[in-house]
Figure (cartoon, rainbow over the protein chains, first blue to last red):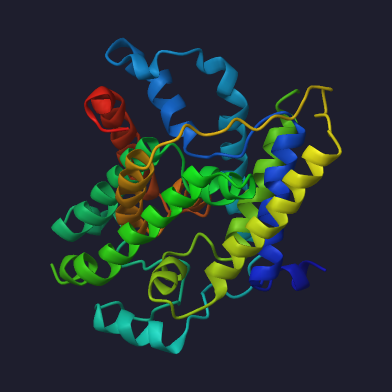
Length: 188
Length: 137
C-alpha cells in the first residue's frame, strides 16, 4: 500500500483530491484560499499600525494558518515517507529547453537545486527569482484577491467570472515571464 | 482541539500537492511551455469536481458541520483588479514555480530558502496593503 502511494500520482488523482480539500473546508464552514494567510501574517506582525488593510481581528483566521502549517507537515511526510524515487518525469521538449536555460539534470528533483539554494540567493539571479518572484506573487495575489486556490479552484468552481479573469491574468503573466524574461534572468 | 480538523486537511493537502508534483518548479515551467497535460489535468479536474461539489452543496442546501449555511460570497465586479493583479501574480508564479500553497509545502520538504520566498511574498502583500487606495480596482 505504502509502495503504491509512493509512486507519483497522476493528474486524475491529484486534481479531484484538491477539490476534496476545498469541499472539506467548505463543510467545516470555511473557504479554500491559501494567500489570505500572507495577509494574516502581515497583520500579526503589526502591519495594521501603518495600513488599515491589515487592521482586523486575525484570531478569526487562525484556522487557515493551522491548515497551511498542516500542508507544511504534509510536505515533510510526503518527502520523508512517501517518496521512493525523487524527481519528476518531464516532457522531452521541456528537458531540452531547460538545458538551454543552463539547468543540469532537469527533473532530477522537484525543484532545480541550482536556483533554490542559499548560495544562489546572494546572486543577482537568485535575488530576482526568489525575492523578486516572491514579492510579485504576494503583491499580485492580494491585488487580484486570491491565488490558485482561491481563484482557479474555488472561484471557477463557483462559476465566478472575476476568477476567470484572474486566471487569464495568471497565464498572461506566466507566459510573458517564461518566454520573455526568464531566459534573460537565467543567463545572469 | 477545534483546530485539529484543519491541521488534518492541511496535512492531506500537503501530501496531495507533493505527490501530484504541483509543488515542482519544473511542472510549472512545463505547463507554461504547453509541453505536458499534467498541470492542466490537475487544475482542470479539480475545477470539474469542484463544480460538482459546489452544485451539490447548493442544490441539497447542505449545512456545514456546525449546522450553519454554506454560503458563497460573490466576488466584486471588476476587470482591472483581476487582470492586472493576475498578471503580476503570474509573472511571479513563473519565477518561483510556486504559488502560495506550494511555498509552505516545500519548506516542509526541507527547502529552507523557500522561507525567504514566503517573507518576500509577505512584503509584496504588505506593499499592496500600503498602496491599495492608489491602485485601480
